[in-house]
Length: 85
Figure 1 (cartoon, rainbow, N blue to C red):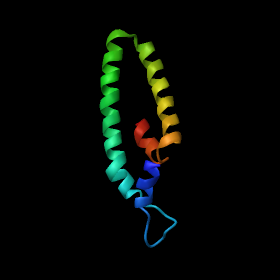
Figure 2: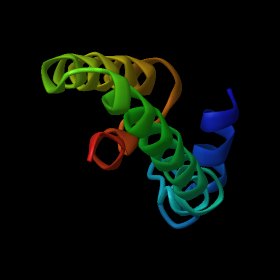
Figure 3: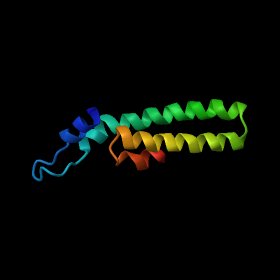
Figure 4: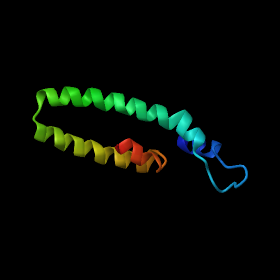
């Protein structure tokens, strides 16, 4: 619901059926992506310090799948590309 509210705030007044996503990206997505980057940087640093590269790659694949699933459930589809990158 919150994500939908951010998207709705970006409705194009000239074309009501279109959204600009400006509010969503500025007020939610940018901070979300920064926080996600901080989280995964810390997690990967700790994980790779005590596990093999093979285990690390498996963990990366698992986390990517989890994030793709979360996008489908909770976020606007436009977030997927930047999140996975």
